[in-house]
Amino acid sequence: MIKDRQVTAIIPVRGGSKGIPRKNLLPLAGDTLLERAIKFAARSPLIDRTIVTTDDSEMHAVAQAHGVAAPTLRPAELAADDTTSDAVITHLIEQAGIGPGYLLLLQVTSPLRTLDDLDRLAAAFEAEAHADAAVSLCRYEGSHPAKMLRVEEGRIASFMERKFTGPRQSLPTVYVLNGAFYLIDRDTFLDQGTFLPERTMPFIMEGSHSANLDTQEDWQILQAMLAAGHWTAESYD
Image 1 (spheres, one colour):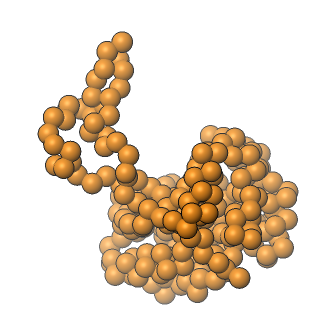
Image 2: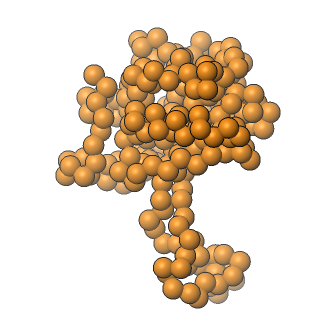
């Protein structure tokens, strides 16, 4: 529980991944990525209920083996490339009878988050009386948006409204969503239809816990960093 309210962890997966085919069933540290997310939720005393929603029969069977499957497979219209997580969760709330409390979105593609990360997010959220949601971020280490360019009619233009001409050190720190945690009050989500309402609290995570698997390159980097000992995959056995 968080703030004395039930927490429902939702793990959305689908079979048709183009960036990394069947990525949710890839093995990592002795489990598939899907099983890692399920075991993560099972190990956290903060989580009261876990539900896996999927359109894929094999992934549904994995969830059933752990006792966390949604009542039925997700309909095809909610498993397309352009389907949003918001639409999937809205459907699941009704399908699985998710009552008042907090929703915690756990994406399978963030396998290096830790139980301590979740504990610290919850503690920070407990201390923030006026937040309706919390989301995990990490520092963006690529080219700063203020230095990015776009091409318009064969000419370059600043990506931002104004061209930046100052020293790099004067630029503000930029953060990006790392995909590890989205926490929100259920009623706020249903009312606003987003995991990022106006009163969303940021939770900053280490880059080493923020791997986000979208492409084959992401998967190869993850494997290389784990093999070199620079990153660590937490064990849940």
